[in-house]
Amino acid sequence: MIMLSNGEVSGSWRSSDPVPASLNDQRVLVMGGSSGIGAASAALFARLGAEVVITGRDQERLAETASAIGGKITARCLDGGSGEALAAFFADGTTYDQLVLALSGGSGAGPFACLDLQALRDGFDGKFWVHLKILQAALASLARTGSVTFITASSARAAVPGTAGLAAINGALEAMVRPLATELAPLRVNAVSPGIIATPWWDKMPARQREEMFAEHAAALPVGRVGQAEDVAQAVLLAATNGFMTGQVIEVNGGLSLATGRG
Image 1 (cartoon, rainbow, N blue to C red):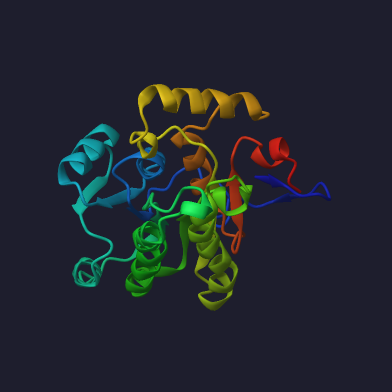
Image 2: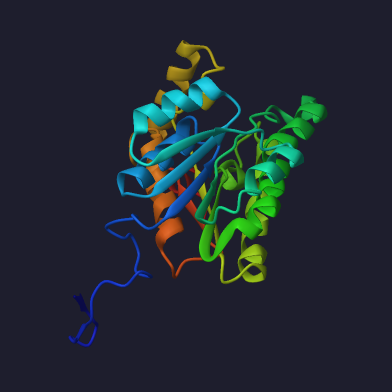
């Protein structure tokens, strides 16, 4: 039962209400679901009973992730940058209720004066273009009342020196959320924008340097810590299951905007 603002009680829990207790009737596709935020999101959906498909390019890592998550989960090895592979993947007629795009490029960071523009192009290829290519290929396989959730990054708005390239990539994706939400309606389109999250994305950095960087950021944030993939997964679940939310960018950054004085 739901209590309304006028004190009246209205019916029972509706499928359009946010954060359902169960997703038993949902089929979720997490592209880039073998580790980090994608894997954490897949695990949360699976824990709520959804049928989950995760994709990635490393079959062994996918299998390990699927085994660790358990539940109704399937791992499919797929290169999201290949148009032919995407066409074959979506040709089986499966309909997905939720699509989560959690692929990460990683290239394009560094001081602007010496920024490797080819690396920035690679960064766009690895994240911006691959996200759009997947979404175009997936449209016919998405439920009309379903959702798409992009995983972007706070670099789009954080104004941190050395991240202009990353800001361009993630900002370009976020700029498309609102027009896509209107053009593709009633399909809902949102983005979740993480701050500093302790995921394997940082493994390329030497361990000591990484821990020092995490500690520095934790000390500057109001929450006093860097994020975990599970923190972001909760926002992904909200964006995917709240039937009254579309065209939004949800920041999950520990109060980064407060710490940096942004509006």
